Length: 285
Ligand SMILES: [Zn+2]
Image 1 (spheres, rainbow, N blue to C red):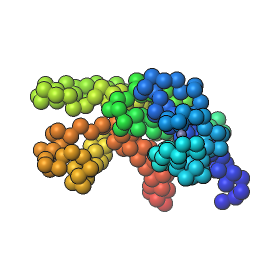
Image 2: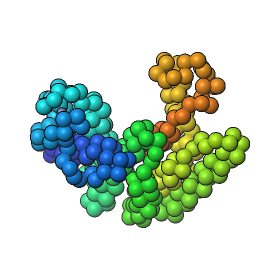
Image 3: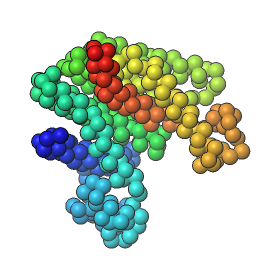
Image 4: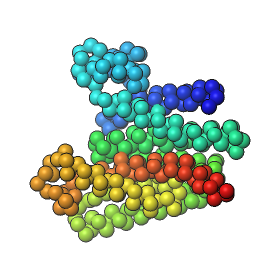
């Protein structure tokens, strides 16, 4: 790998980590109806403002030894984890675009639009997954704009992402409508709500970005991983379900579905970016 490429990828990692740092603020403040720009980052316990070097993604937390500089209260390891994960995902979706640009498959503007669009998708998805995990709510402000944005991206560079704008529109429509029907049926049969309307909007958004034919495997992937997680946590006693093992416990288990939809969506996106070119080369001989 030549040095220019190392610099490009290094900058993309820093860009992703900086956004991860901002997402930590969004994840905490958005559900609480607080402004994401003011006041500046401060310790939730002693309220003192953080110095700039405390705010350096991942490293700030490490330098501080995971404690507030002033009052020594522990700072959750989730902050650097969100920053590192966002940085890694940002780089992962960027590499195929940068490579396609370098070998001349794409015009610079096409690679740029594709790369930035998928960064936005990553940032929104990370925030949605963690807010849903924390609060069992998916803010409309994060999920709904992804639907028109996905369709616009499909208009601009759909042929390079494998999703036409017609398919993006249809997918978001079908995903929204289909899941609403399932939700209605489930509620009618069991008298309780299984899926939140937030999940419906998120699936519509993922449909706009990933296309119609990816939705059935995506839903399957999300459900299987959600169930495995539910079994895992109930088996290892991390929940209060120790007395109710197995299927019975699942009926009473309230698990946010959003994080698993996001997980399956990102897995699909990455598999498609990396696996499809390989398969095409292989088939093309
Ligand atoms: Zn403090």
